[in-house]
Amino acid sequence: MKKFLKYFFPLFSLCLLLIISCSTEDVSPFPPTLGTFTVPAKRIGSLPFILIPPTSNSAGTFTYTCADPSIATISGSIVTVFGIGTTIITATQAADAGYGLGSVTAIFTVSQLEPPTIGAFNVPSKMMGSAPFQITAPTSNSGGSFSYSSSNTSVATISGSTVSVAGVGTSTITVTQAAFGTFASGTATATFTVTANIPAANIASDNFDAAAGAALTANGWVAHSSSTTNPILITSPGLTFPNYFGSGIGNAASVTSIGQDVSLQFTSVSSGTVYTSFLIKATASPLCMDQYFFGFGNNDIADTAYRGKLLINQDATNPAKFKFGFAANLTNRYTMNLYDYGTTYLVVIKYKIVNSTVINANGNLGRDEMSLFVFDTTSSYLNEPIVPTIGIEDTSSVDILPGRVVLRQDNVNSPNVIIDGLRVDSSWNLRN
Image (cartoon, helix red, strand yellow):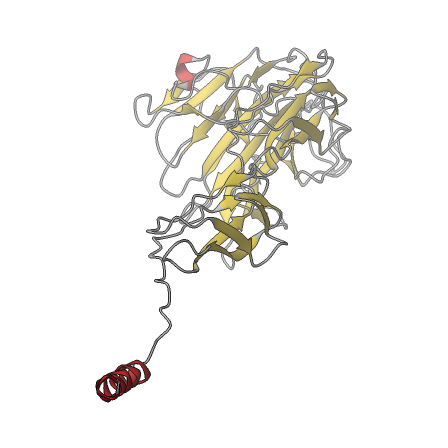
């Protein structure tokens, strides 16, 4: 027994010492290896969508949270969009087996609604008395409903998509498409023109409604000078002017600085008064001065006597503007007002035939009288003004019998103008 104890206790002590000397450490689980986590950007109004979890070497379940619930909320893995902005979505993977908890974040952006792509929108011109008509909706990549409005209800009123003509003039028609899905609301506009019931011209007229590029000489005019040089051509679009009978009908004529001169002939007028009216828009021309581009002539195109001649003269102190000039024949007179290039004006030239055997108020034998009237879009012109813009009695030239109107392109100092809605009549007849 003593011998046993002698060997047991040393062995026991050694084992105890080994046990005591051994230290223990807690073993932590491995973190999972999470792949890239992305959340696609959306637009406000998008449908709820499901998050795609990142890849992982752990089998733990994922949960998701959104840092800003005013932008999006999450139920399970379904995201519902609420507002516009940017927030952080966190994917958290629960511990599983030998893997611990892990998380990864993604930026989520919600933007404004996408604007719709609205195609061309047009509303055809009409005449007074036209029946109500339906607007043709433009094309669009959005399914939103369309509504329409008129800027000038004295010209057109709209109920639903039905337009009713109310008066002569122009109105801006606006089409509005309602927001739909991820598409925002959008608008487009079109100009709607209503013209008067056009009366037959008492003497002559031309709305230049031939195709653009056609020569005036192929459409009722006769060349009387430089017949093959720079012919006067039809140009598009035509000119518009509120309530004028020839507004927005057909195209226009382009009169440039030098080249062909043309005449529109009519039966000679031997008594009374002749009025010619037309729309005009001038473009800036260097050194544009003292060259007429319009006038009355005798019916014979070989006759070079022209009266009631219209000019444009670039202002010397303000080259961006011009004055209208007017001459019975030889002496030019100019307007006090300055006018703008690129703006459409209405011009009326009056030729009054006076019996040359009658003594006038000045004690002289009567001579024909010519007057120029110039109107802008704010002017009242439906009745003849008492005082013209410029009035002239020609006391030095032989009178003519008006039998044509001429468009003239003389030299490099001549103006470049667009002419439209020309009418020759025996009375002040600008709107029916």
